[in-house]
Length: 567
Image (cartoon, rainbow, N blue to C red):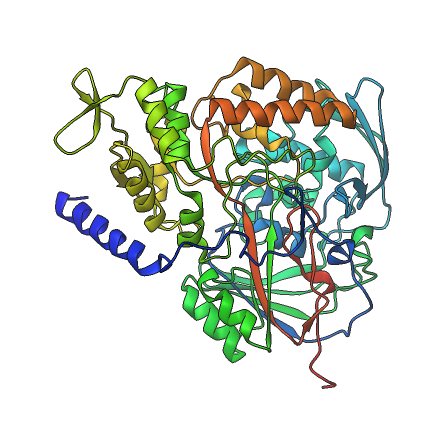
């Protein structure tokens, strides 16, 4: 990128800040998110997750999404699309219920050994994949092996079942899974879409074909797919094994789902408004008020469990972020409510702690890293950066306080957010140039640790063990592991409590351990939380039966039906 182009980009982004900032500061509590907020914790009614009454069969649902995942191989991806797409094509071994407890799905029941290292699954005997293959103990074994096979190059599923060492087929519908150590989140992660079941025949004979021609056991099958344009799914005849939590019986109601990838937010909105589409999976937040005001439309705003979105991850092995005082100062210098407005137009919820508000064992603590310019300045003074240069930036020993923010063009984290961060830090004398590169380059440098600060960050999971995934030292990438601890953060106390939490099944002890972990993260600040990771979905009023997946809080299409009168 030339110097001229860099300058032009920054000027354009600065204008974007002015264009989308509110005339007055956003009003606290003005967010219209679903759910009930009690003492900082968000809950949802059980009715959001299960079908209220049978629907009408037939019809085609026209759906839009912002971008293509580029593959349907759920085991090889960490893409957010799989949260909802996985439920269209695949089924999981278990599900979470409305309270987040583990409930049956393809496994009818399970036993856990006293030492927590052996799980015995008793499987349904009436499930088939769309190629006719049976789902049985052998199929489960093939899938678990595929998830952890290095050839799959899994950034998510492999990490989630890392303690799994192998298994034993006891009989056709009984499988014994062996773990090298107790791992309490094992059942939770098996409920997530990325760990769904793929035809064992396809895994054995044509694993590369999964990317564009997947074979699952789910309620729909893939009829056609055109990269970056869309896909068509058709009802799977004979399907009758939806997760019990949904209260859905039998086949899906819809005959067909036509999915279009529409990167332009305004087109997703106008298509929905005009009736050209029925459902927007990535409803544009800038149009949320118009959607709510339209009597023909419905807007749903849901918080994903696990980790909130991050505005910045620090590389703690490089200065200046090897100093915790600097990290804490930067976190307190960033106006999260401003970022929430810029990225979410009043729809997103600012966040200054490290677990999503609807996650089990969440302990609200938005004060420790709350926006406080005076406190940020005091911390920087304490760190010794007390000098000032001609441009007003802080100095120490003749060096300017400076770090580059590495980012890429990301609709979920617009470049205007990076510019806002840059402006916030300038107010406390911190110089933060922005380097915007293609995603592939950013990814390369991320895993190589060649950055000072990494903009944006989104890692959703359905368990507080997401803290282990992002911040435990065992989650640092190695030659054998695609890890998510990008900043190479190491803290012995955090490692201790997160490791202990993985081995405990006592809710009281888990609450205590995760409370310590959350507190420790606000003290050590490996990253800067910015907003809750939210799902915005919108649909037309004649779309009925919309419920939400218990793990991902995304729409679940098996129960959806169209109320358009008799054909």
